[in-house]
Length: 430
Image (cartoon, rainbow, N blue to C red):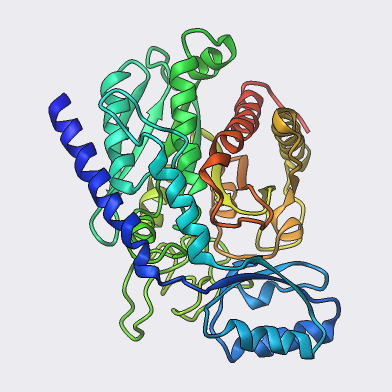
């Protein structure tokens, strides 16, 4: 078994070295990330018209429909369009700044950092680097094998491309019929800090169980369902072909564009405001609700366990926010006081680590209106605490959060998630 794992690690590292050497065939050489801040309704309209006539990759927000006055618009622009875009912005006096002057060079710098660390040995897994899907799945098998009393691994289905959808169940098995918390990461492929956090959470929960009375209490009284990579096909594609891929990888009969936004595909106000019906858009809602096998599998699992699952947490990036329902409308949820208190406690716990500030509140007012989201679906299906984290940062690195920041980001997020889990053990009446 040990020899097999060592061979697997060697093969994975070899594959990574190949990708690292070519680094996406230098496809991002000369590309830039710009931050644009429109200061009037006229400038917003000019921006929307401009983006209709050129192809850009929206980092934040995820489409032109979410552009608001005074709010940052972070866009990844191809090398052939940067000059054209800057000229238009200058001519129309719209303020902008360059966040990343050369995307390829930034990625190569980070790849150099990765190769300078020891990636994996037979006995040690590095939680402070990003890992491709194969390594994460191998790690899941290892955790299941080495901690049988606390960890159970199973598959809830298969992705569009046939990959297994693995979940880890954490908790002391002696107690039955416990409340549970679901945590998923990697819904959007390019948000690599998500899967890194899910792995960190599992490691911390298992390793601190013997000596940390607070974690032991959580593991004894709750079950945690952890899905480190929700969008397995998209995540794999983001390592092999396009670092900034967001959607799933399903095919469309009428268009060459592939994939669906897995956070617009849930059966709750499906394909309404904040979602696109066009298959080529990053916020494409899909041909019908739960069209994506990944979404359907998680929804089926949560429906089956709805009596026990009391909290749903989805890890995203980037914005430094903690969001809760509703996403699809401007309205207050019935148990607002309890959820607001949980969010406040989580953000305070997060701040206590490094002084990083998170905004928190309903997704519709704190971020933007979006339909077909997982937190709205979870809440509608009887899960009283449904949260979406938008982890670091606020745009300086965006989706290219350096591996040197994995540790502090995970440490502070761990405190926040633990605070939410601890709240499940108390009765909230409001």
